[in-house]
Length: 324
Figure 1 (tube, rainbow, N blue to C red):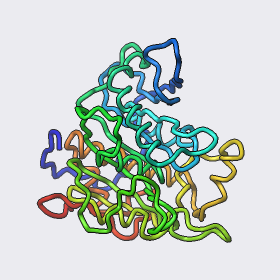
Figure 2 (figure 1 turned 30 degrees about the vertical axis):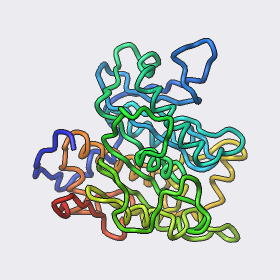
Figure 3 (figure 1 turned 180 degrees about the horizontal axis):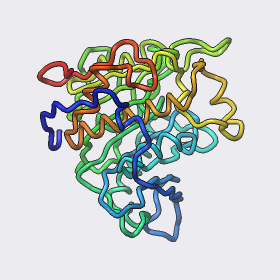
């Protein structure tokens, strides 16, 4: 991990700053494919960037199955406000593509960020090419893992990643019906990853919603992803929330309606879940990229500081042992 320091600092009473909106103002920049603009992305993207002059790490954010990238605007803005340029591609149109196609398209977008992202940023803002993180929700979480594991044939092999975060990742309908590429091996610590990994889970994801099947079924959800990761790895489960509870409120259109009702949802405020997800992403990126350990330590030592109740207890395992 880059620049790791053995800091023993704790915020003993206050909520970790990672769970709060950051201090940097942000702007949202859509960019679409174009036959005439050589800097245009290969897929539609939404870029959320700080507006304050500076050089910031890049975070690729992959949406879930059949969802829209703008459904995550609150979580994405939360992350960007802490000093990250977040690029959220739209990897499907009316119907989701095959899993391998989606992974290869993700690789193309990542290549584009390394070459042409600068052309779409505010003039005083630069991307730090040394630090790129992968984040994804649901099927997008599986896409992020697949890219990190080398399954994107389109990806420039010179591009390296600093961190990986799966937000309730899902690899298929069941162990027997999984999306391509089939990355789960059902062998502990089998993922060959050379970056810190955080897996965020939901307590209600494996539960059915009336007649609908679970959105994050057992054997293909966050638990199996975490088991197959090697240290350094973290696991944070929001016990009272469902698979879609980190999305924005009042989602538009038919897809937005389905996103709001197809999964088992929690009864607490979704804003708390968004703060939790955004905060874990921020705290883990601070830890992985900058070696800032105080906030992730505080969450591990006192889970009650989280906006969402954590159960089981959160953990972070380094190669040398568990961090507490």
